[in-house]
Image 1 (tube, rainbow, N blue to C red):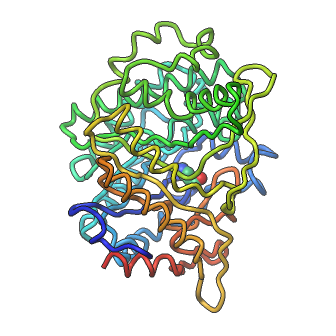
Image 2: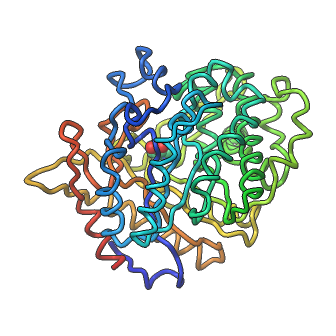
Length: 439
Ligand code: IFM
């Protein structure tokens, strides 16, 4: 790596991130069925119909995995709690084994000197709630607040930081408009509702955690830089709309208590009744803002129905999942978010990393491409800090190779290689390079 801790301001934190369904092994410990189990069981949705039943078996290997985080010299661990592990029916009876698991996780992190950074929801909605319309049902905000109360009454006292929902765009647009994530809908009305309700649920969860006396609460937003394919007004307007429904909708809702006009041109007829009255909950004040960043998209206008745009192939080098490597986008987002939305509020890079076609040869995984990716993005973080953006931490996605949703198990994002036959862990060259940089 081309950096050490000394290249960052004193107190800057380094971490790594995972999520429950992607690593735990959902078949273990009494977790209830989720919409990802049924989405994966439906032919055509997920590569080889793979699911999170076993994943990395983190449920049974937690201690060894936490040892890996500590030995890397990291400061923090960002994990998520599975709603269906804690409340198998989504509401009602509690699975004590689920609460106990997260309790052990919290203690295990603190024992190793690691800061626990929780995300309440990272996409595995309990099936009984999906049956009731899931994110399209306004009641989900209260169901989510009840889940928040249940899990955080148990572990909230030990969390360093907490965010309600990972990547609202994925919960809303990717899952209800593009149909690429559970529940796999392609419906504009469902999308408008889901995108509003996910923010309402975020706000209700923040209120609930404040009521429990918790501090250091934030939101985690994924952002993609929208690059117009050319300089025509049409291409610029298309990129502006992509930026609107991908990035600005959520930031604007939470930090400005309004939605962008260009998004409302498509959404207005489909919004739930009384949506305008929800902004005091949605915009309840936060202590920090998280940015998940991976890539940019090249946007071209088309003559089809709203949003009348296409994502087109771009010229930059790409990762294993075909995403262009564009580190400047991270600088753009950190500086723009501070300038236009959050001011002095601490910013955290809550996810950044790359999928690479890593192979284990003679006990080693040489992932030089990942080292270069991390170096180039960390250079942009330093540049943003130098230009005044209050960035306080950086989390690498991900600790382990894991279940990459509809792409299954062979897209490898980990600092640590996982053999999905034996579940053996092998730290990659990037893990060792990070260890050298941090210790
Ligand atoms: O694996 C995902 C994660 O669940 C959310 N952020 C992006 C990652 C890579 O696609």
